[in-house]
Length: 220
Image 1 (cartoon, rainbow, N blue to C red):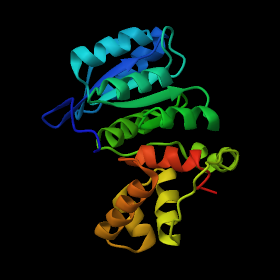
Image 2 (image 1 turned 135 degrees about the horizontal axis):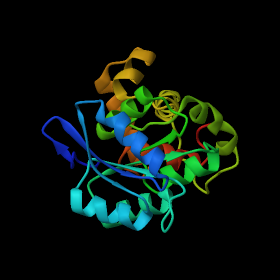
Image 3 (image 1 turned 120 degrees about the vertical axis):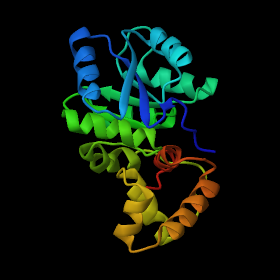
């Protein structure tokens, strides 16, 4: 099952920020604070503190720097998934290299955002991740092809052409309604294709299906 809506206070999305550079950390808090739908409940400076804040404050979104001291962002994503914490991890980093993005998604992150993102992009990413969507910068989504070709699995499930179209759309960060519009399908039809993808790849959410498809080399 996909994660719930833990950390949503009424209509507000509760966020914990984990960033070791105080100036950038404060900037993120200010950027998110402009939006009335978001509440920053904690801002910390290292990986261990990030996990402690996630347990204490039960945010919907845990926004973490990839290069945190103690535990890096990918390790935090893995710990959140392992411990069953009801929050989604949004990684931020100065680099958007394919291998790092792949590892982040594979370990359970729901999104990846470059540090050069504008305020509107940051707010949009947090709100989308809170809704269960996968967030990837356009340059990352379009640049994954080379990384995907380098990865292959021992068992490649047979996907229909339509399932591949849906899968590529998820890899580009599109939502089910957006996929439906782009492919001229009903949302219920897209959901049916999505469920079959989950079953064929042995996963239970969109971020995981993209990561698993990348691991098996299915997104060429």
